[in-house]
Image: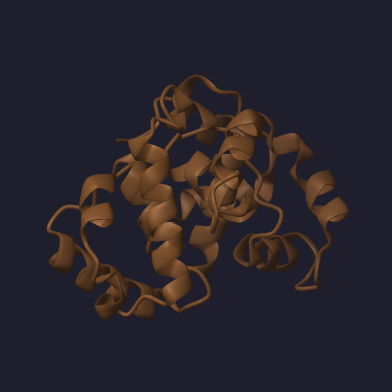
Amino acid sequence: MTPTYWDAAKIELSRHDATLAGIIARHPGISLQRRADPFSTLARSIVGQQISVRAADAVWGKLVGQLQAITPEHVLANDALKTCGLSSRKVEYLQDLARCFALGKFDGWDALEDEELVKRLTEVRGIGRWTAEMFLIFQALRPDVLPLDDLGLQRAIGLHYKDGAPVGRREMLEISEPWRPWRSVATWYLWRSLDPVPVEY
């Protein structure tokens, strides 16, 4: 599912930022896509923490094969998750996440404001602010999320706006101010400037 605001956001961003206009023009025909359900999105984020994309894909493939369907019920009913290549801690995180969903902790999450949703998500073990922000962008399709701790976004802003120099949070906020209320879209295109193949969550 492509966000309904995508085309309007592209036009507005291109109008206000020549650098983004060039990046957007170089990546036609692709957009952010929501591909999974909320539980799978968060589970995949936990699986991918602190390992390479390739390793995360391999572990996720084994987990899908083991469970058949990535649901809270299947996670809680399976006692062999470590055989998929998950650490003991990640198994605990996935089980905690599954319990939260099974108990209805996230019922009505889509009605929460961005920061309320981040707070609710980060109350779960294994979910930090970065993971919560990825959920807001890729699953909730929130239009104005700026993940300041994302290394790819930091690198892209430094590359395109600071001649390759490192950027701090304050500079990122200043540079991104004209992108409101479409900072998720700007972020997604800046990621594409580093890697044209979209990451799936």
